[in-house]
Length: 202
Image (cartoon, rainbow, N blue to C red; front, side, top):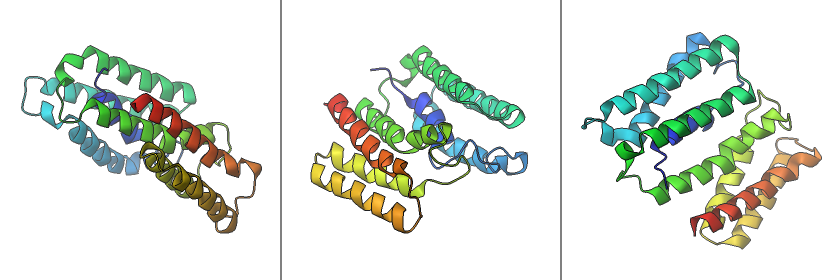
């Protein structure tokens, strides 16, 4: 497996607890907050490059991430733009794989984080693309629901995963007044993707 340090840095920075459609995210005046978050994530996933000749890999990938941010701020975002960004960072990962091998962040850990991201934050992004959720609306309940489902499925506590999905539906129905039929999509897709990831991890 190709190490995913650089790819995950970009993926997590732009999709975990962030909404690329929000005005705050695209505002030049508040961009520095995102920049701080980006620096922390890139350092966390690539800290081993700091004390090596591969330091330039970290700097280059971070600069490319910033360039994507600046283009997004100027031109706004589209699904095609975001997917191109993910592909480019995956290619960067492949190009620099020799610099990332033997990382403290093991391949299994990186694969686990990737699955967690797809199940939680990236699925919310997909919901926004198809306007299942309003693009400006936060999806804290849905993300948390799928996070718990993912953890339970990967630990093979299937009953708790199903119960978590039911609790999530009830919570959104009562407290968030979300009463569209799509309310069941979040836990169902959370269960399906998590189970697929369990098979992959095996």
